Each structure stands twice: as structure tokens, then as C-alpha cells.
Length: 254
Length: 236
Image 1 (spheres, rainbow over the protein chains, first blue to last red):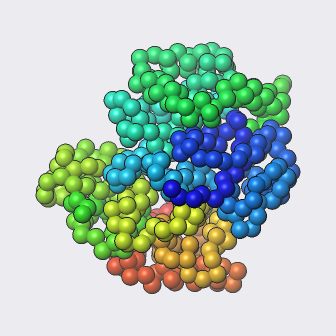
Image 2: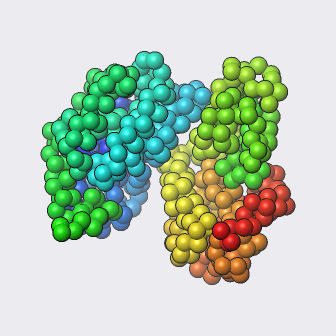
Image 3: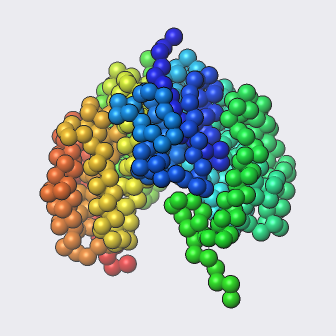
């Protein structure tokens, strides 16, 4: 059994990118510490001491036990970018088989998560905050649905490809079911109807299969996600700020 | 023992060259088939890659001519996925570092190339976006490089991801191809590889000296193909 160094994850409940990493950590039955960051009220020390870009997740590998407002030790490794971290977890937990061992299945899993990145992220973000048509997200979901096998996970057994996708997918479902987002209510309702229609039967089964896994119960707190999203939408309506990197000018009230 | 590999490629294409470099590092046996990107064969999208792009690999299946691909072979696409695929098929190639932290650094470098450098280059090349944005991206990449050697020390997938792009940036700039004002190309290449960017300059030289790069880059061909394809950018 391989010895692992300490794993510390800087996390936030509402981030799908953090969620991806937590799913993989739970699937690997890893021991890890979490330091929570409130994305709507980011402490200055985070950018000063942990990640100059301010982004999360950060996974610190090695070093002593960390607390908030502490700088990771220089001999600890700081890893960022959720997909890079997922592949790292595949490598340090080989016995967990977070990716299959055969090269073709691994390539299919990677192709899937690359497709998640390139087809869903922008439409998802734009639909939730920027009035983009629901169809842009729905057709992205259809692309990914078509890549799923008739049953089970992306490459049969659960893999990091599922982590990459389901973190986005589960949030879309929660947001639509609760009317969370800056879209007009009627747009949200139509999108929810489409999501619940036969068009996405396979996708919904896939989502339920993921929700049934213990890793999801451990790594997804629905109420906290809803609360944070509500706060984020309210802040957006008042200030035009979406996140640390994107801010819209507020429309004129005239 | 890996199964049969057929690579659908194009000499002009930097994405395709990534996979060619990986296969060369692996000393892999494979069949190469050139796709004319301006005149794609009608069987290519339906039988190999619905996105109609290169690179693509047909893996396994019966021994068929590359222009008659069999439905029995597995079809794979996306250059970075294919580079990792080659690394998985040929672990003795050494292109994937053995230590997980070093691997993560290599993949992080690749993410920087994809999300910062390539878009900044194309914005400058195709739209004459401010050159400072390109220099910022270059500065970011340079900040990731160790004081010498390759991106994570030993030659790896990180270098494979970037080399074809730096090579084509050089061809474009030295031949004044692009949307930017004529005459700026050579100056930008000079700035991008000397002085505060001397480290990039050295890194580019190291990449171009690698055997797997040399054997997969036909500079005369790429120059000619670029001139033909991009000569009119400035006029549009």
C-alpha cells in the first residue's frame, strides 16, 4: 500500500471545479483536509499566501497540517486546475482505478472530459448569468449524452470523466429545479421542462447513477450550494459581478 | 504489444505534429496518411473523424489501406488525448514523467499553452490583437520554465504540446505572414526570443534540435503552405 503525503484541499461548496476533485478524492477513499474559502467573501490571505490568481481548487500535496491564513510550506506542492488535479489523483491512487488501465478506455475518458470543457462550460455560464438561450446548454448536454454507453458510466466503470461532467450537470439540475440563476423565470421553466423530457432520459439516469454513489453524498451539500448560488445571483443583480474574473456593466435603468 | 496504428495527419497542422512527435519519441510502428485539409476526402468525416479534423488515429482492426478505414478499428481524436494515448501505449518512450507531481506540472504547462499562449498567438496572427497580449502569454510560459532544459526538466508531453506552435509562429513571423503590419513579424520574433525572452529563445532552440521534432517538421513545406494559405490575411 503506497504511503501518501498529506493532502490539503482549498475548497468552496459552490464550485463545480472543487466538486470534481472531492468526488475523485472520495472515490479513492483518500484522507484529506479541507480549508473552506467563501468565494463571495474571499479572504485576502488566500491570494497572498496560497494562490496569487485567487482561484480554487488548490490541492496541496505534502507539508505539515495547514489552517486558514497559513502559507503552505515551500516543500509542499501546490496543484491547480481541476482536470490536472484529477489526473494527479489517478496517478497517486493507482489501486483506486480512477481511470481504467487500458489505453483505449483512458483515451475515451479523456476525450469525454475534454468535450465537457469545450462544449459545456461557456454555454452553462452564459445561460445562468448572461441570458444565453437554454438551447446552447441543452445541445451541449445532448452531445455528451450521445457519448455515454447505453448504461453505466462514461467508460463503463466510474472514472474522472464522470467527476468532470457530473459536477456541472448536478448543478444545472439544482439551479433549474429551484429557479436559481439570472435567467428569466419562463426561460428557466422551459429549460427545466426540456431537461425533464424524453430527450434527456439517458442523461437523467446517468445523473441518478452518479447521485447513488457514496462519493456524491460526501461531496455535495445541496442546501449549501443553493444558498450560495442564491447569494451569488443577488450580488450579480446588484453589482454585475459574476465572479472574481467577470463583471458586467449594469444595464441602464432608464 | 500495441495494435495497428494509422495516423491521419497533415504536415501543415501543429496539432497533428504533436502526435507525430509522440510517435517518433516512442519509435512506434504506424501508418501515416496525409489529409489535404483544403480538399478532404469524402470518406474522412463519416469513417474516421466526424469533426473532420486532424489528427485522428484508427487503432486496431484488420489490415486495410488507410483510405479504406474499417469500422472495426477504434477511432480516436483530439491531439492532447492522442499524445497521452501514445504515452500509455509506449510507456518506455519516457514522454510521461514517472513521478506524479512532475506529470502534474507537465499537464499544468500544457493547460497554460492551451488556454493562454495559443489563443494569444492566434489573436495576434489572425486579428492583429495587441502584441502585448501575446508577450504576456509568452511571459507566463517563460515563468514556468526551469533555468535550463525542457519544461519539466526531461523532454515530455509538455514540450510536445508546445513545439509545433512555436515552430509555426517562427515561420509566420519571419515570413511576415499574418494580419499585423508588414515588417513587424521579424521584430516580434526577435523580441520574443532575446533580451527578457532569452529563456524562450533558448527553449525554442532546444525544442527544434530534438530529433523527434526535426523528423516531423518539414520547414520548407510548412513555409510554402503558409504562404499560400495566409498571404492575403493582411488584405482582408
